[in-house]
Amino acid sequence: MRKEDLLFDKKNLRKRKIINTIMLSLCIIAAAMAVVPLIYIFFYTAGAGLTSLNFDFFTALPKPFGEDGGGMVNAIVGTVILIGLGGLFGIPIGILTGIYVSEYSGSLMSNVVKFITDVLSGIPSIVIGIFAYGLIVLPMQRFSALAGGFALGILMIPTVTRITEEMLKLVPQTLREASLALGISRWKTTLRITLRTASSGIITGVLLAIARAAGETAPLLFTSFGNSFWSTSLDQPMASIPVQIFNYAISPYDEWHRKAWAGAFVLISIVFIVNLIVRVVTRNKYSGSV
Amino acid sequence: MFFALSIIFVVLLIIYEMFIDSSQSREKFGFGFIFSSDWEPVKEEFGALTFIYGTVVSSLIALAIALPISIGVAVFLSEIAGKTVGTSIGFLIEILAAIPSIIYGFWGIFVLAPYMRESFQPFLQNYLGFIPLFQGTPFGFGMMTAGIILAIMITPIISSITRDVLKAIPVSQREAAYALGATKWEAIKMALLNAKSGILGATVLGLGRAVGETMAVTMVIGNRAQIKTSLFEPAYSMASVIANEFAEASGQMHISSLIEVGLILFGVTFIINSLARFLIFSVTRKADMK
Image 1: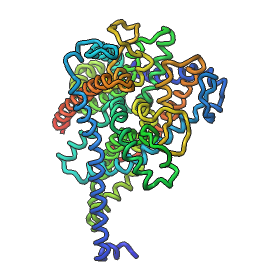
Image 2: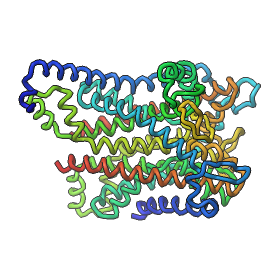
Image 3: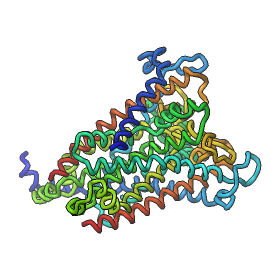
Image 4: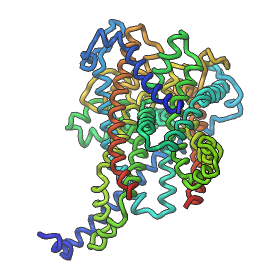
């Protein structure tokens, strides 16, 4: 049967309309199925986390099993330190690479760099952990915050690079040309004009990278390891929220599970808030540029 | 720029270091490492087959579940939903992608695994028990649970890229289809067919994520090095064996073997991601040129 005949066949049309309805409903069901786990996980974590979240959680050290109370202050501080260490080199490298890829795009080298950035973002985080282990833990002969921070820094690079690149591409070309026409050198144009225009977007990229790094567990397991005591020295093992959650989660004690839920709630809140900020900032950005 | 080059340097260093650090096990076991299923740290016999099997099967389960749902979500977001609903659900799904994997794993232990053990797996066994895949004791922790957790985790990635790819297909094509009297679904189907290499790319990218995923899998897969037909049985994946054994490895050979597992994992994800980038690029480039 030819296509023309198909289109005007009444009975066939009904069949096609039914298929249409079925497939469209399936799509809606699929969307619902994808959203349900999010809502479930979010509310479950909130429910289990809020009940065990208290002031102590943020101020007290972990207690051995059997003693009531205690918190995760060492893990919270640990996570902040680890992210700070990672950000110290991960963020600048990420931003500079993003500038390179965007401002010098078209050359073979920038394409290679772009590809490599994609590769880096695809490397499983546990492999980065092995890398940090071999590079820092082995020579030092012990687990250390330094190694953990290093691993997190590497993980931040591709996120920051990509967002920087995207945001710089939104800066109108005419702005750069205007600056160059005034006789301002290229690097100064990039630094003072382009980068400044895109700064709010880049900051959101950095926030996103930080939120991601805050939840990374796998690369920390055998780099910064974990620590149940207060420690801020960089050459010693250091606690972090995700690793602490992991250790508590696989333990058999209910009390520890409750602590872990509280930690999970803190993490999920960070992710949620950061994404919300990013959403608001980038929306203004897009509507401004159109 | 110097910093952009440093990224290339870092990636090369990762490869180099893992290659050197795994030399001991590579020399001893050769290619047999990939085909041997022995993993006995005490006897210093190592082979990665069970882990490769676990990673491959759990990722395939995840894809089988996530792919149809993701396409449905993408179609819903780009073709069916209005702007407000579309962006807000899109936002929810983005958050789903940003939740740390440790939280998925934690949720998996306390919600998904018990549910699988008590309801879902007995149900499958009752009605589909004649298939060897669904036989044996429902443990809750095992291959199937890991696959489902992974499916939840990669759905956001596949669906958001599929949505972007669908948006890159010119509207005029769909309008032409409508003009010929096509139903909405028929027009969408045509767009999907045109976007197929991009969707394939999104799928492969999701696969890459599933293969490298560590924490969530480690927490629900059961961590037993065995190859069983039944999906109810506990298994082990490449990433999770590294996560579990690395910090307390019993000797040089053990560490070296784990690093070799990491090297394999790196190689696999590298190939998968390159392929995905290429496929996605081939579609979106056409849209950029337009």
